[in-house]
Amino acid sequence: MQDQLTGIEAQAVAELRAMTDVRSLEEWRVAYLGRSGRLTQVLRGLGSLPIEERRTVGAQANEVKRRLEALLEEKEAALRQTELARELEQGRIDVTLPGRPVPLGRLHPITQVVREICGTFQQLGFQVVEGPEVELDYYNFEALNIPPEHPAREMWDTFWIDTGEGERNVLLRTHTSPMQIRVMEQTRPPVRVVVPGRCYRYEATDATHESIFYQIEGLAVDRAMTMADLKGVLAEFARRMFGQNRRVRFRCDYFPFVEPGVEVSIDCFGCNGMGCNICRDAGWIEIMGAGMVHPKVLERVNYDPVEYTGFAFGMGPERVAMLRYGIDDIRLFYANDIRFLRQF
Image 1: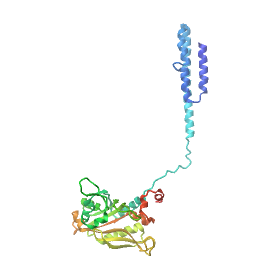
Image 2: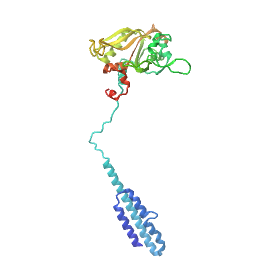
Image 3: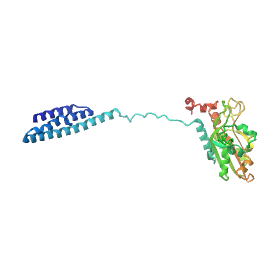
Image 4: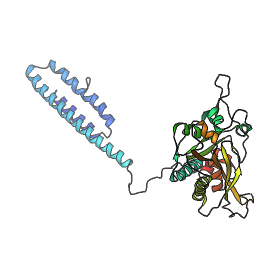
């Protein structure tokens, strides 16, 4: 039996040294040290030996078992170290090479223009505020001097929301002007704000019109404000956005919530006022509407129109972007064509 133990140990050691795979170690352990392993079978046969011989063989068997377990532990550690080194070598990164570039997205061109416009007015002392896109008829029309029977409502036909009460008093806002009222209701003069946001109008789309578009509204109210303040602020804005050499023109126009109202234009930056395709040979390009806040609008928010005056203006960022980048169709901004958007 002692010779048998010696043979088992020699064979086990030889097999263990030849192994190159960690997974095969478990098979080896079961074959030699498991409950039905070869060494365990020898130990179970000790009961048939005389007492003296049983002690000698038992001690030898335990010593063989201890040595095999120690060799198994060493072999497993060595194989795992080898596998780890192999995995590290396969996954090795040459840090001296430049990294792969990570593709970055871009801000939408309209977002870029909105931020630039708002940033320009912030430099001129205005605050940026936002308002709800779902608005009440009162704020969208009535408080802005556009009562239910006013023909100007046809200029801003929109999407009405059914509230289940049988009345048309909730709608998607047609302009950002309702925030004039909301801001003045909660603020005492002086007021200087610009309001960017989306607007909605129920109209056919073409190269220059969309049913969903952005608008930026501006409002300034204080004591003794005049048309000169309006002209100074808007002329400075136009020169910062379109170039310091721009000339600015103000012509009379009509908006229900201002009196007087003006159309603000700049001389064409494509032809310097000589006439070209950009300005349609007019020499001037309209960029916004503006005017002095109507006294009735001030009275709605309990501002005394004798003590306080102000001016308001509104523009479309899409139009500004079209002028700056030479884009001839507003629908391109919302077609989600990556070939177009990637240019900005």
